[in-house]
Structures are given as C-alpha cells and as structure tokens.
Length: 117
Image (cartoon, rainbow, N blue to C red):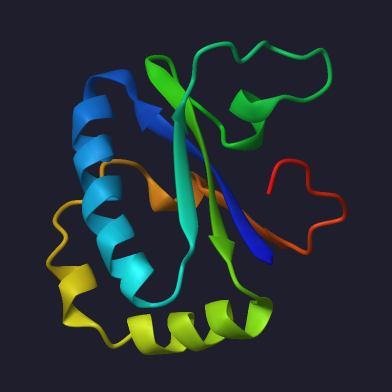
C-alpha cells in the first residue's frame, strides 16, 4: 500500500464544483490502478498558534480546506500511472480546476501502521 495525500484550499462557493471535479477524476484514477480516494471537506479545522492547515496552504477568507488521500497498491503503480496520465487528454477535458493548484500540498507516504483494512 502507498498513500498520496493532499491539502487544498477551495473557495466555499466552489464546493459542488470541486465535488464534481473530484468525482470525474476519480473514475480516471481507478483506471490507472488507484484503489481508493477519500475527498474530505473542512468541518472542524482549528487555527493553531504556530502552524495549521490554513497557514500551510495560505488559505484566504472564504476558502475551506480539503483533505484528500489516494490509496495505491504500491509506489511503482503510482509512478507508472503518473507517467501514463501525463499524456491522457481526458485530464485536460476535465474542465476548470476549482482551486489554485499552486497552493496545493502533496505528499506521498509508506504506511507505518494501518488499522481496519
């Protein structure tokens, strides 16, 4: 198992556009071998005294935090998928991205402990 995680600031009025964008993209990710995607919309994201999700992505007034992760079989599957997806025109046709991709945070992780699978 290999996990790609994202923190994304999305304007509150773009929630439905983001949901549609994510839903369309997830169908393509499945074709490339992604096992699971969880898209989470901010519900309780407290402000920290030194750092927090909002500061990490330079969230602006009226933006909510999206926390999402993708589960892949392994790192090699994700890397091979990324290489193939770069040339897939369907990603270009997915429409306008409903957030500022320059402020998205991405990280990939090897699980240390997993409960419930």
